[in-house]
Structure formats: structure tokens, C-alpha cells
Image (cartoon, rainbow, N blue to C red; front, side, top):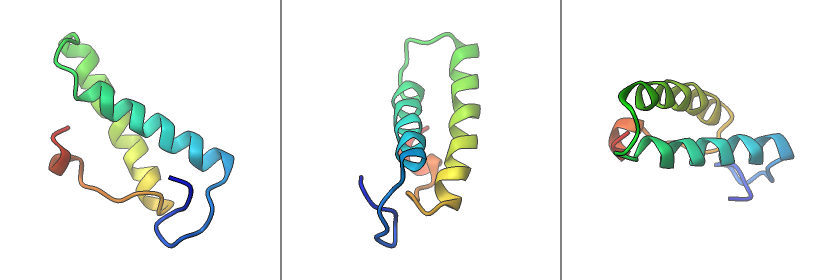
Length: 67
């Protein structure tokens, strides 16, 4: 993704935030992690999801994607 939800180009910080968010989504979907790791990954993902949504970078409900 190179633009936000209204078409503005993403800056370096925004691209990095989206990368972290995407990587945590992948990790949260894994079923081979220890329960404490899964729980903490989900907490981190929720915090990043707030920033991603507030900045208009992406919009999704984490419950809708199964995490």
C-alpha cells in the first residue's frame, strides 16, 4: 500500500507502521505459539490497529479477520 484511505502518499513512518501491523496480523493468526505469546501479540496488534485506523492508513475490525 502506498497511499492512505483518501489517497495521500504514505510517509516512511506510516509505511513502517503498516509493515509492523501486517507482520503482527500474520503472527497473531499462527496456531503454534505459546498461549502467552498469542495473547501479547494480540495486545500489540490491537494497539497498532488504533494507530493505523486513526491515521486513516487502513480500516478493518480485527474480529472480522479472525484475530
